[in-house]
Length: 283
Image (cartoon, rainbow, N blue to C red):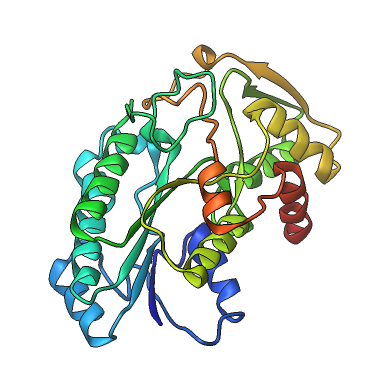
């Protein structure tokens, strides 16, 4: 297959590129904004047609959650409009699209893991534009797979793990939110799940993927420091109210992953195992 990867310079896009060498039977087209502007419909249509694209993995998104509150137009363009363009272009070739989405499509008021058929109710511009992106992709491509994920980190780009490693070495004391609960996702594990879905054949629909287990940001930070051997920084728990942000965060964003595990027969690693692997790579 000829497979287009968008957002190849991001965390997930970079992890996808690391795996591509294991799949020499496919031709991958790794693009970011310099190679392909996904907000340009004509550019997408000609790229997909010229390169006879069979499938698209859309890793590109506007992910600055707080900035999104004041940059609604740009956020909508990247998270809602662009995925619909990609979906429509690949549909013309009878192809498929994997759209990466987010736990932010939920408001976080639940207390049991969110299933794919739970009603979304986003509480931020970021969450609203990503939900609209899901709906657009499903509307314009009959072979659309949506994968919602949460708390993404990797050895690439800027993320919570790398920030906590840096601050742990720089600061003697750190306050971290303890009343927001979720599950970290190592982008390498998500990339592997995406490749498995491509190999086994796209089963359209919405899926959830994160690592196994449940944790707070505070506990996550403590684990990051413990695994990395950082002992000089005292981490103290903060209430969300003590750390106001422009965008609301889901207080509870644990995702039920039963569907993707059963559909593709995959085993998902426990969050701490994947965190240790990532920290080892960063060393």
